[in-house]
Every structure is written in C-alpha cells, then in structure tokens.
Image (cartoon, rainbow, N blue to C red):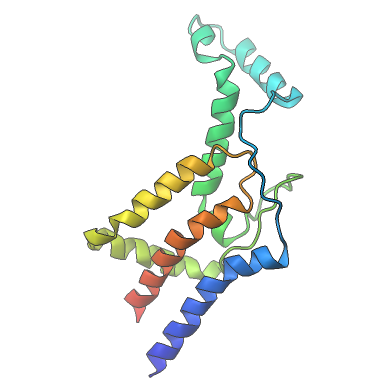
Length: 168
C-alpha cells in the first residue's frame, strides 16, 4: 500500500515539474536556427583563433563553418549537460536572453541514474536512448532551445519512472 502511494507521489512530481515551470514562466518558442549572421564577438574569437595558429592547416580547419560548428556544439553540450535538467545550470554566469529554467528537482537525479542502469540491463528500452540522441541532435540546430527542449521531457521522465520502479 505505502509503496504504491510513494510511487504515485514520485511519479506525479516527476511528471508535473517541467511543464509547471513552462506554465509559471512562459517562453516564446521561435524557429530561428544557428544559421544567422556572424556577430562581432564571434568574428573576434574567429580572428583570434586564426592569429594563434601558425600552421598551414589553419586555412583548412578555421574557415567560416567553424563559427556554425561552434554554435552547434555549444547547443549540443548544453542539451547533454545534466546540470541543465536538475540544477537550472547553477552555478553559471547569467547570459542575457537565455532562460535556464527549473526542470526537475535535484534529488530526482538519483532516479535518472537508476533508470539508466535499468535500461542498460534490459535491452528492450534502447528506443529511449535513440530517441533522446535524435532529439538532441535536431534541437542543437535551434538558436534558442528554451521551450523546444520540452521534447526531451518524455524520454527523461520515462527513464526516471523506470528508476523509481527500480527502488520500489
């Protein structure tokens, strides 16, 4: 009896936390991609990289696609950072225009780890990993991922629910 009550409370907490943060603080969902004109700061960093490297390969490696590649990998690394989902990117400097919102309570990271362990043992849940990877690779093309990253809510929550079931 108590196990079912605790299971229900934990599952409700996991399921309502992220959508509740979007309701409390709505976001403007935009379809802008990382393919926008180069900013002055990005151009400055690009020029510094060019000046520091004295080899002949720099003309091949440091080209205009380097800026796009850096934007993509920056977004991908933010999406793969557990700090983004459980600690609202704390501690991190405040970046204007970027809203690192509360997604899950910090203590639910335990359930995520246990859910990952459960999926490694049981091969029938590999679809979760494929879905998460595909979603992260696609979302990394967006300039602002806030609001769009709710797409990752399903697989992450599913992993946490599997972790709750592992404990109980």
